[in-house]
Length: 130
Ligand code: FES
Image 1 (cartoon, rainbow, N blue to C red):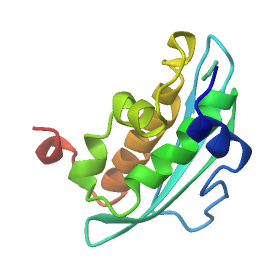
Image 2: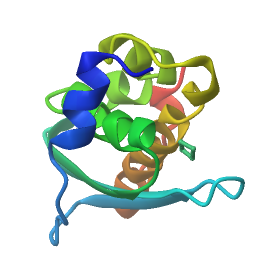
Image 3: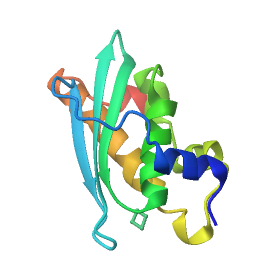
Image 4: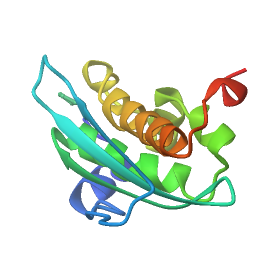
């Protein structure tokens, strides 16, 4: 049912730790399945220099969280805001149809963590979203 890549990231999630001194933090919750994610980012010079997550969810959600952090690390804020669920699914080698919604949690939490960072800086996301 799951690709080898999904199983690998589910069994050994990357960057799954609590970042106490994060520059941006956000929690996201799926009211339908009850899964939840917290995403932490550290930013340097408009680049995401570190990113981590804590998640409670299905195997696809955990693998997606892990892959989301890997795809986001080293990206500029503008690039990370353009990261999509489809990017995560492709990097994981696909997800079963009934699990294709699962990356929404981690990608949305990443985007919200970036917005949290920008808000703390007194900046808006407007210029990044065009
Ligand atoms: Fe809830 Fe996968 S079933 S995120």
